[in-house]
Image 1 (cartoon, rainbow, N blue to C red):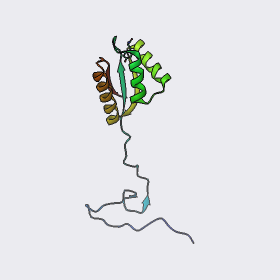
Image 2 (image 1 turned 135 degrees about the vertical axis):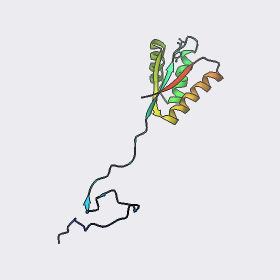
Image 3 (image 1 turned 60 degrees about the vertical axis):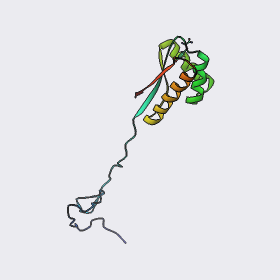
Image 4 (image 1 turned 180 degrees about the horizontal axis):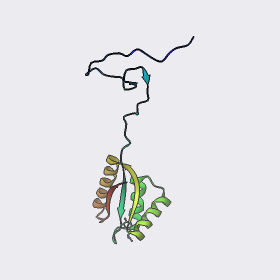
Length: 120
Ligand code: TYC
């Protein structure tokens, strides 16, 4: 048994919902790209200062960014030496929440630690 893919044209009025996979209603099956977009990603950046204790920064990187002790120490030292460093990359709302958590912990512990986010 063999089947043909060519279908008779069908007339649709303008406001009928057309099947996006049936081009020109000639029965030709085409692929339609999925209408999903990947979300923009944001780097959460930690800024150096002269007053926040190094062990507080390491603790915060473990607690908020789920870094190991070694990873947290590397990031803290990078920020200490270069002035700024990336703690992680997240979607907008997650990055925004991490920044707020860092600033709240710094404020509660009376450290001047600053944190911001930047689109990748
Ligand atoms: N520079 C600080 C000190 O020597 C340590 C520090 C590191 C502070 C990273 C902030 O984001 C920071 N005590």
